[in-house]
Length: 83
Image 1 (tube, rainbow, N blue to C red):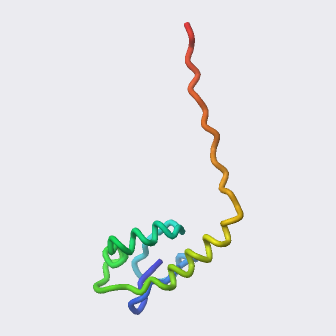
Image 2 (tube, one colour; image 1 turned 90 degrees about the vertical axis):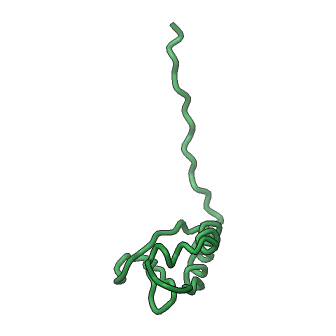
Image 3 (cartoon, one colour; image 1 turned 60 degrees about the horizontal axis):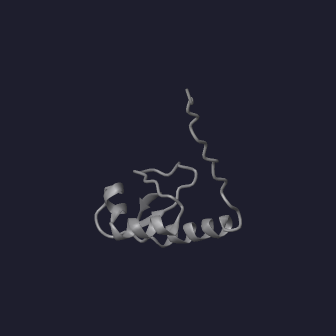
């Protein structure tokens, strides 16, 4: 995402000009970043940024992934030589 005219803009293609920042597309990560005021600091802008476009994107992303479970890697145990 990048800051543009006092708003956060999702830059899916990573082509917009300006300093960019990354965010996990998870509502909890977005809330935490907002509470910590991380966006203005990461993007080096002054003032408050409107996060509505990013919140809309994260909600849409979460809804599209709601029915799909992410595969978890199987845990393997270390084999120990019994001798």
